[in-house]
Length: 185
Image (cartoon, rainbow, N blue to C red; front, side, top):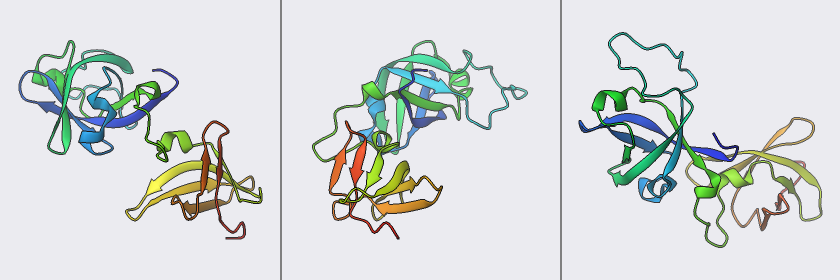
């Protein structure tokens, strides 16, 4: 797998009888990078013991593996993809639960003022006066708006709403985010 791989979905099983994969993307299907990326990287689920269950078809290749996608389309709340070398339902079902990743280089350029969350991970967050608040460990979304989850040098966690009122500046090249946030909060 490339070092810049980003997990963007998982295999939900087969679709139809000709080996198409049903993919559950981690964003809206119509917006998924999987629609245009033609090289996907499959890895086993983290809880996968690697042992074939009785009666199940073995996976068509060892994991992790790169696969070539010949076609991918949105279908309801998921995606349907045709992958080279997978031509029957049972083989597609053997990949159920596998994580699907693509290279970050395959992502389209975001619009001005938009950011891929994966690019925010590791950025240092400071106040407008330069007081360090921590580095971004994750970006969580609980409905109203995304939250930057930070961890400071002392190991304390801090959540900051990722909205323009609190985050007026994002410098991805400099790996620095300015947040109008009280350091004592």
